[in-house]
Amino acid sequence: MELNYVQLSNAISQNNISIVQLSQEIAEYMITQATQLSQLKLLLNNSVNELNNSLYNQYVKQTYIIQQLNVVDANLNAYQSTVNSVNNIQNQSISTLQGQVSSLINQVASLQNQIGSANSQIYSQQLQINSLSSQLGSIQAGTVVLTTGADCDGQYYLVCNTAHTICFGARSASINGSCN
Image 1 (cartoon, rainbow, N blue to C red):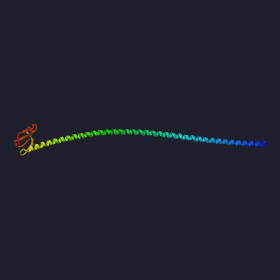
Image 2 (spheres, rainbow, N blue to C red; image 1 turned 120 degrees about the horizontal axis):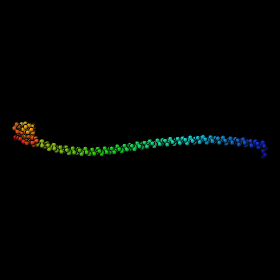
Image 3 (cartoon, rainbow, N blue to C red; image 1 turned 180 degrees about the vertical axis):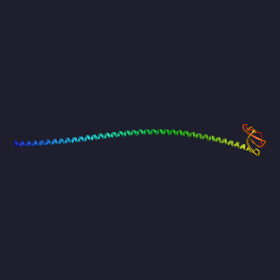
Image 4 (tube, helix red, strand yellow; image 1 turned 90 degrees about the vertical axis):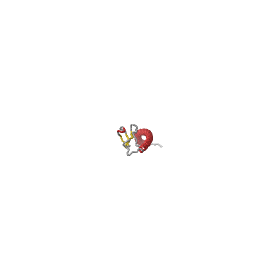
């Protein structure tokens, strides 16, 4: 089929129009794609920035937490040291108190021994008193008086009656008379 010049011109014109339209569509598509890519890049940058900010905030929080844990650890160490010191003091106090209690027990035992010895002496003295009482009871007199005077050189003596005395004192109880 042969084309004449007019038909050929018309076909070329139509093709030119189609090429122009295609070029415009391609240009619009590229612009759209470029715009979308730019928006996507912006979104990605924003996301990256947000992620970086989040990571930095997490780092700051973790650093703060680590610092607080270090403070808590130091406080726990100080508390443990204090507890150990208190335990040592308590142990020393218990040992000291045990020593004091043992010393007091020994003192009580010594005092009990002294009390026993004193009771023995009291018993012995009571026997002597009973013996003296018995001896005094055997003296026959109206009134017996323990006094001092020139009759026994200032020593103590018992007045049996007006004629006889019994002396006691530093002169080892010399007898100057009897009450018989």
